[in-house]
Length: 333
Ligand SMILES: Nc1nc2c(ncn2[C@@H]2O[C@H](COP(=O)(O)OP(=O)(O)OP(=O)(O)O)[C@@H](O)[C@H]2O)c(=O)[nH]1
Ligand SMILES: [Zn+2]
Image (cartoon, rainbow, N blue to C red; front, top):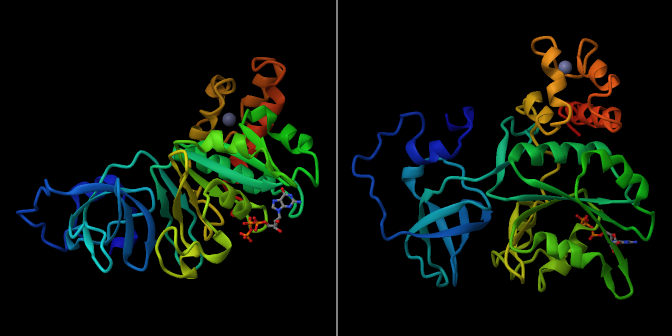
């Protein structure tokens, strides 16, 4: 069954069927006349695809089997690609992905699934107060971003309620870029910095309810009202779309992908070595670790290495940050 294994781009290209149960079409057409666009919304077996000058509703061609096609995917379309009311195109190919962001499995769905493809930045929105920041959630997002090959950006909202210093301080050893925002009488202070950071890129926004994500999105994407289900902007359908990821066009080029239904990311597959690799100042210190060291255990050689000053004065706080990220994989928050 398709659900037993994780699909990736190589599956998309070479294995159209399910585990060989479906005979591969000998004459699989090259689809030279296909047009390529980006998936901006997915809703009940229909994909909304943005082409240069129009938006097209499409279905998945049978030859693709149950291949996952998600927001951000670049897909080739054939058939009626006019985008006219009631028209339906066929997705016949999914282009190779440059990044995949996975959400974690939940009780009803034991498999990790790709939620967004080809995004290059993960914007982690956290309120400085009301609701209280959740550092462990932020840590998990950071690991997910690094693992997906995406740049992280912290957006710290509601600075009018609490200064950002303490929170920023706890991330200083990680050197994560951040922007501080607050709603004022003249609009949102800090929004220009956010805009500059997302300009021309594909950014995925994550954050818990109430942190001010909609406030930011409404400001970044004029004409979007996330609270009312952004009906007109994307799918032309109703509110239910707001539980799945959706890509919204930025005025200055690029996209923000809102992920209302995504609470957590799958990190179980992340190899500790990949996290250590993000700490080039500490990495050489693992040479003396026992085989299979988790780097969060008594035998870990990093403690002595840092104590000997090899990682400089920032060593201890860097090691603490590394361990925090390593532990965040098991949090499941
Ligand atoms: N004091 C203060 N309040 C803010 C700020 N930004 C947003 N809010 C308020 O916080 C509340 C939640 O904002 P939303 O933008 O709806 O938050 P959200 O993250 O989209 O939350 P959901 O819609 O539940 O997903 C609203 O009452 C906003 O007016 C801010 O910078 N300062
Ligand atoms: Zn170790």
